[in-house]
Length: 353
Image 1 (tube, rainbow, N blue to C red):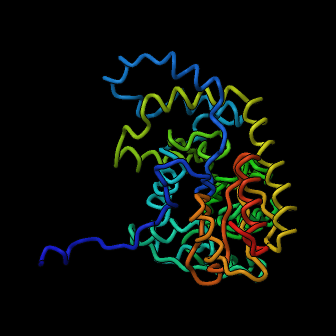
Image 2 (cartoon, rainbow, N blue to C red):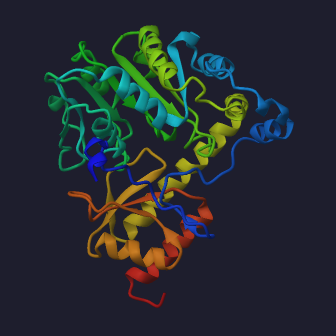
Image 3 (cartoon, one colour):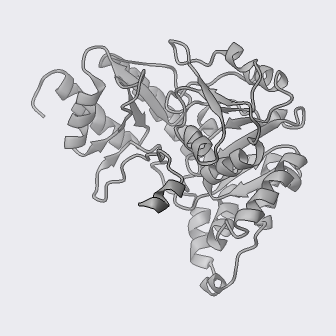
């Protein structure tokens, strides 16, 4: 068909499976606990007649609430429909040069998709044998840098001094630090945004605040970065944030105690799972995310993945170079994780399943 010559063809991002029946779902890094009770209250109090109106295109109430939480002026905050939307707008806004954007070879697999969609040149830099970033790879000419910290799917974090060295060494490029998992024990680069005008920090409510279904994400940076992003956003779609998400997001921000309770619970479960998985012959980089990226000393990852799935326990397997023998296991409730461990004990011991 002749019209296909003009089609923009890309290899799309492939999300984790979303089974529609009841399973133990440890494959998409969702929070196993419900959102704050304040969000539930906000849902019950929401005036549905407002749905006939367009939402505030600037989402000012939500922006102001998050800015106040982060102790920033509101003009240093950008809001979008989850961090994917925020990152997509950032790629479209800042990566328009001829030099390649740099990011790791093993990282969030949406980065290269956005580069392909927006025709952005890019190069991936290999993580070392321990899945750590090699700093020197990012101290060269580039059109921008993107680093997930903690990284996905490995769960490793680079310390703040390491991140600052990269930002400081690239004053002519925008450096994006994607902190989707920062609330599970990592150190944020947010404290550096007033020091470096080329730094953009991106966070989300999908993981630590248990609101993946509402799609709320933020970018924080100097006012000029945020203004440029808003110019692009309003040129594509002015009404990106729906009205319920604005109000429910504000409610989540107001419940700091609940946020600390559920993130603390996930961290404790994660640390216990590290001990249990070690006993079963698994090894992994030290994760500070809400997942663990594991490989087994004897049994291939794909075999474990398939056996778990047959028994309605879903984890994530990536059929990719270097990580094909690894599984990413989201931290669920204690009950869910114990069920997985009991299954693995029987399976790895060759017992009946």
